[in-house]
Structure formats: structure tokens, C-alpha cells
Length: 124
Image 1 (cartoon, one colour):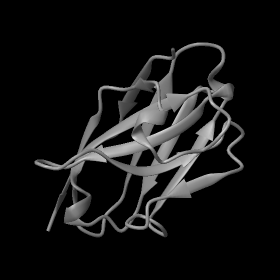
Image 2 (image 1 turned 180 degrees about the horizontal axis):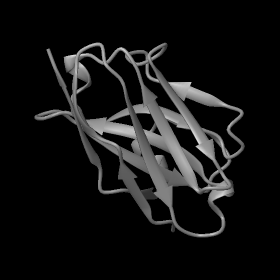
Image 3 (image 1 turned 120 degrees about the vertical axis):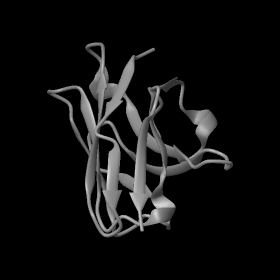
Image 4 (image 1 turned 120 degrees about the horizontal axis):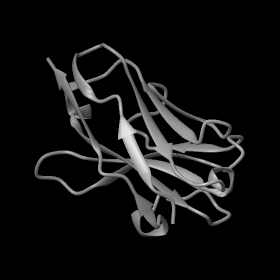
């Protein structure tokens, strides 16, 4: 398994932007499908977005499509989540996840490695 550490969370006003980073350990990062999930207070964790090992294929939840962008830099063992036009309902703990499978999936149980999460709070 790969070790994941998220960073970049914080407090931002509605309409603002944040960029989250997820740094991964190990030399095989480029073989991992990477995903972002989030969990709001009192709610179950939900899928946000995922990216293929090459970065050439991405999927998004409808709630973030057009506002969030996932990308990766395999040379830096890092995946990013650029979040624009943030809304109060985007407030959550954001988790990075990884899997060595071939497909890009939105199912939580597909991912085998998880970070500790980073808090994102959007004020109205």
C-alpha cells in the first residue's frame, strides 16, 4: 500500500478557491488510480473525483463538475484537487485515496489506501 498525506485545506469564503494536495510515498505512484472523497458533518463519505494513472481519464461527481479539477504529477508523487467557486455545501473533510487497479471508479470500497483527511470550510 501507499502512504497518503493531504494538505491545503482551510477556511475560505463562498466563491473562493482552494487547491488540495495529496503526497504519496513509494516509487510506484504512477501505477495508482487516485481519488478524492469528502465527508460533511453528519453525512456519509461521498465520491468527489478520480483520475487514471496516466492522468488522461477523469471522472467527477455531478455536484462538483465544472468547478473542481483533479490533476496529478507523477514525477512529484502528488495528486491535486483545484476547487473553484466554492459553496458552503462543499464544507467537509476531504480524503485522498489510491488503488492499483486498472479502472477509474467512484466506489469507496474500490480504494485500498486512504489519507487522514484535510478540513475544508466554506463560509457564506
